[in-house]
Length: 383
Image 1 (spheres, helix red, strand yellow):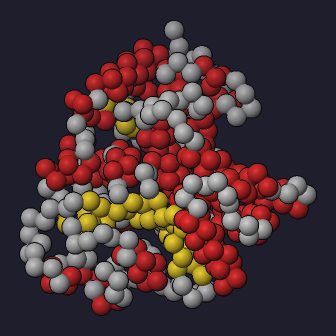
Image 2 (cartoon, rainbow, N blue to C red; image 1 turned 90 degrees about the horizontal axis):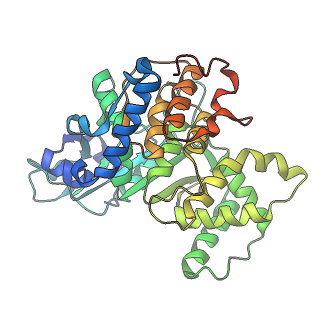
Image 3 (spheres, rainbow, N blue to C red; image 1 turned 90 degrees about the vertical axis):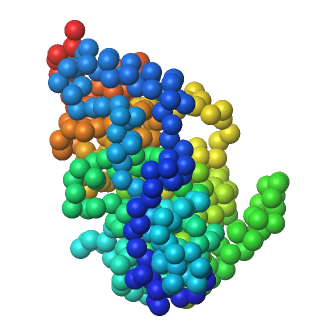
């Protein structure tokens, strides 16, 4: 697993996962979650009562999960040295890649080079990604390779199940390719990681200089990854993450637990004045880190509302604005999916406002950040 990917990276193929194996990996049994399904049915019923036309654009997630295609990347047995044939492959687990798609107005930092053949990330990042696997029976899920990008129906179904894919992954590997750290910064990060791992109880934090740590976090938060709605979706739904950071000569691994510690320190010790603007740009990410580390009972939303989930996604960027509806539904844990046409940003806000209201959250009507602040016809069509 540690060898350079150059010799066999093109041999990784997207393999169909059997239905039995898929259900085992995604652990999806709608009958086991009657309360969530009943809640989803009630939500759809309420949307139908208030806005019949809009209700036609949503459905129960449990009705389409079985038809969601699920493929995993894997190398042939002959390339891995394993004696298994690869036919009828049974996957014990999988990891997922979280990254930014390359485009004309965004390029990776100098030194990472072109994408690896057949992959959406550079060879250096790919090498570190492959090293995260636990063994032969662990697959890799990458959206660009595991979803047929030319099949709109397959893409729609995959988007509806994206929450399951990231929730059930053993590990989400985040490739940060547009920010590079100097060797001096890399040494600070490595010392912080080492000290944090040595101090498992967290009673004492590394004494490396709060201002230095703050600047490193702000630099990291400037990456495009932290501005994208789908990346926030992957971050919030994963159960474990590791960030891959580019340096001048290497790739650093930064576990999410260590990054949370770093975020907490930066949040508490940020200086005003010149650091204030930088903090404002990084605040959203820092708050997500702190929220993620907050101890709370499963399903407890006492500190967070559905409107807050929707508002967080609304402020981020997305190539397809309508995807924000699916992302918001997934993050909020609502077992419904969107199957309507593409909409404008204001139309997406309108639909999310309807959903929020139908869950019983009336705060959607007020506040400077309310979805309806630009919609004067809120009562149109309501009984």
